Length: 460
Length: 63
Image 1 (cartoon, chains in turn purple, green):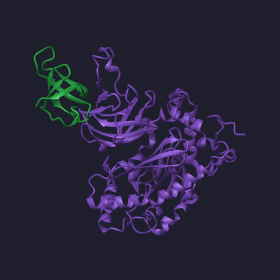
Image 2: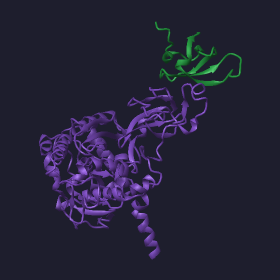
Image 3: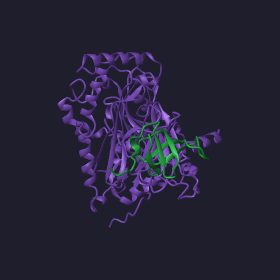
Image 4: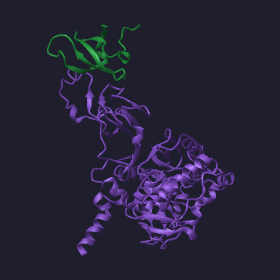
């Protein structure tokens, strides 16, 4: 019989490389992870370019919660729980817009864009002026961080600051947020956010984007069609073929990615050959990028995952995705597409067409992925199927620290995939961190790097 | 017509009468159909004061 009522240690057994299917399909575990993972993790909320003016707002999500990202009249960015303090009704039912107040349609309580409770119907007559309106503003996140335009928030005041949580992984996120020519923070959102629901647990896409190179065969048909920006394969690969292909996993944080490290003094290769104008734009950017100091000029981004539920695809296409949990068996996907803010219009148009051809509910590559996740989830729900754990044994014991290629040192634990092609080190890293969250009672236990640092200092 | 005032489309500067009999002038309208921001006009304790006015308190449009 399946006796699993909820999470317990042993479901994630990384000493053997085995993970129980229960963590994907068990509804009690799902309920527990809302509290233990999502209520205390840093979560991606949106991009500042979505709220450029005072009064602008964007209705977003943090885990299952509806939240409002908004810029108040003074220009300060806030993230609020989208729920009236009186009876919980959503005070914002639009996707985005500009407003002076958020008014609850149920009983009419009204809040300013700074979250303060501004209007209470019959305050004098019915309440006899006796409730303290200053204590009944919209619930605001405990911590908020705007990083190169992206907005991140956390409900837990005891969590470390966002950049400490990101740690050495920041350079991989920067591959999306910095300009393609290497200038800092030049990305802007292209169009709206694509949103759709898939019938699988949120950890399926999180695992996939952690760096699953093993499933490349799934996308064979897209490669054969030549959906890429040069009419060959699904991406431009000429630079990648001379680079070192790596898995990089940051053990203390639960972030991991595929990345390509280019040789020193490597010249830009032809890319985006379907359009001479776009090809010239990227050739120019690549040259500029190589002239700017900084290690990132030798990195080519590839799929990665910021713990717990944000996926990055820095290069082709250039997007962030958020895997919002809906229930144990459903995930709402939000995909954000990025371009250089000052790229020519023709480049943005070209990229928009390529992005939606690749990603999103109608994107050819994403459709392949969804087929895998959805059917794997469905086939793992039965009482018999649940008895058999998944294997994550690939490449155990083959990751190294202090990896360096021609003078460029990589952080974290690294597996060189140039010959190996695939490993499951990133997935083990993801689930190791997930299990730590499920078991740790406080952030004191989760900030292992601080504890280890203090120990090192004491030893010295 | 129902005789109910629809505050959603009232413009800034419009004068309205409240259930209390007080007359106020709209200073801004969030157009949510529930609230207006208005200044009390008539002499009295609240004259000159600005306040959020609940739609159900508005009984008549003066100008």
